[in-house]
Image (spheres, rainbow, N blue to C red):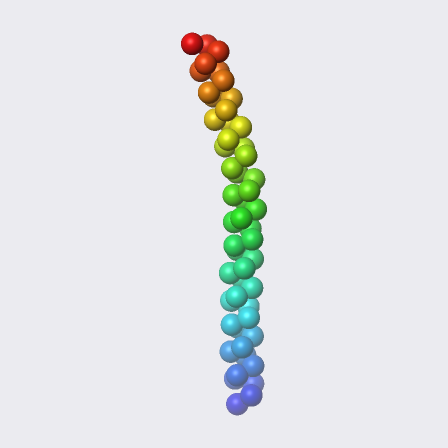
Length: 52
């Protein structure tokens, strides 16, 4: 009986860790993508203004 409880607890912990890991990875991606997209849009805006 204890083994079943232990396995269930371990799978819960692994699920939580997977969720946290996925969130951290997504946050890192967002943190990286936001400045990049901002820089790209700034360059596009600058080009549009300087060419116009």
